[in-house]
Image (tube, rainbow, N blue to C red; front, side):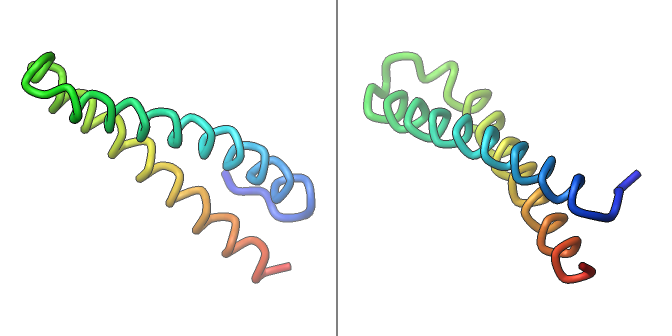
Length: 72
């Protein structure tokens, strides 16, 4: 359920901020893993998938926020 109003917008902004921080850290970790190849190559696909998922979720939240702000 998506709420309308200022509270849900503020909540989304907090979620986006937290997720953006986590996404940035995962991006740096993925970069470090890639630089160290072929060491730990076994972890590359799983870690890349996790990084992809967090960025997909972040994009979804940003689109939700944009929609709510337009409706306001």
